[in-house]
Length: 261
Image (cartoon, rainbow, N blue to C red):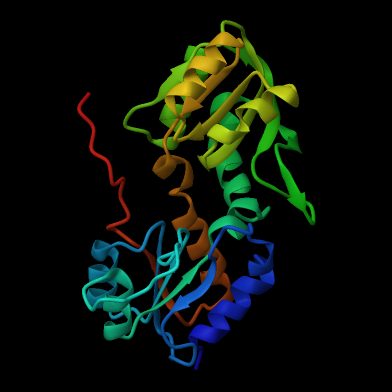
């Protein structure tokens, strides 16, 4: 039989956990490494709804993007997500920053979604290199320049966003940086590397102020919508490696925020 440890070892072989950022907590975070696995659920976050779904589907393992344990725990209560998983015999493997940086992960997934709508070239340069040829985000040339508003509209449609916030840099976009999740810290770096705009999520107020002052466009597509592609990518990787296991994307993996438009 295939065990949780086997799944972990496979993921580690293609998206090494050793590449994670120093502040991250990726890897095998809860459960029994020797548990036989018949069903896996992939999810962006391990929420109570995702755990309910795993229990209902009789899944032994959840493979998520965000760590179910991020900051050190001093106690684990029975009703917490970690406590519920352990009580229910469900293990957790979380891939976070290794997946963000992997050429098999977020970079490829976002390019596949945005390349045609935005007209991205098939070549790129790293936004921020982290060693071993890995990068958090990429910078692409556009086949034809776009206005900030048009780029924001196309990104919104391509990523299926409920809403998009953007700052108008006041000039056409010819080079665009793309980074998943929270990309606010990359605004200065994207400018320094010659990009006219940055697509990411979770930009703070000051990023909009600064980018407007500096003639740079930021397009905030949200953390969830720039990373939900994880579920499908991980399902495909695992399905090809373990065809005997039933692998599904969590139906309860939805945007945690609601919007009034």
